[in-house]
Amino acid sequence: MLAALAWFAPTISTLAANDPIRPIANMFDPLGTPAKMIHDSSILVSIICLVIFIVVTAMLVYVVIKFPSKGAEDEKKEPPQVYGSSQIELAWTVIPILITIVLILVTTRTIGEIQDKKLPNEALRVRVIGHQWWWELEYLKQDGVDKDGKPVWKRDFITANELHIPVSDRNSTRPTQLILESVDVIHSYWVPQLNGKTDVVPNRTNHMWLDPWETGTYLGNCAEYCGTQHANMLIRVIVQTPEDFEKWCAAQRASVVEPPVGDALAVAGKKDYFANSCVSCHSIAGTVSRGVEGGVFGPDLTHFASRASFASGMAPITLDNIRDWLRDPHHLKPGVLMPNMQLTDTEVDQIAAYLMTLK
Image (cartoon, rainbow, N blue to C red):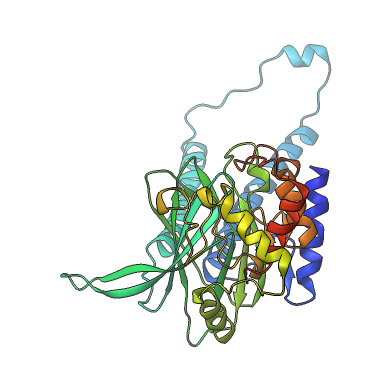
């Protein structure tokens, strides 16, 4: 665990110089529309509960002070009993009912406004697929409409772990809809400053939406215990200006650039990568590295080195960190599904050099 924290800390400091990072996932500082709605409802409910607590505590203190114990004999006596008081019975029946109705109406309205929100057609759509223990991110684009006039969506590009979305201008909002799925166990997607948590359940599709007001990097975590590395299944949402976001999308759609001919280490690393079973789990667009049956078993590596971190946000992408990971992934993430490939030191150096060219 200490090793994991040691790796995570420089991840934050590394990015802080270029992009504002909110290292504390503070739910009391909402910076998105659904998070603000949840925050406001929570404050109202907390105030109501606080008033009840104060009233009950005050009554208890009053009784204790007003009617102190007068000794052992007094404690054996039964206090005066009151029967048939309509005022008291109405008070302890009607008041709790009214309070309960208010709480139900407030929470129901908030849940309805968030879950039934109809997003505009120009909203960004991203499939977020939970794996043990990383996030697959598939960006979608509209591909015409079906016979009922509903938009048809297809894959634009795919990446992993770091979700990039555009900031919403209050005069021209562009929210992001997340289509949440899981291929193994139940996960939960939670970025407190942008929205509440939503479960990611196998054989079921859930939805949530984000509408951030400020650029920067927002941190979150899987909020449902999903196995050994649950605590290290981290979430990064990088909110960019629309212009920067479009540039990032264009870069993700671009073809992979071959390692420079003069970079003998990276060129040899490419041969090592394709000669080993890396290609069985990871995909690199435009190559034969397409994962299991053309799908995705490990994170997509097409533009791996353009990300700030790997291992679901646990480690910054540096040559040394990649070497350590290739030597023994379980040193950083015990229980991770990527096996120790028993690579030689030469293979480790060469493959790490190749991965660093995937920008």
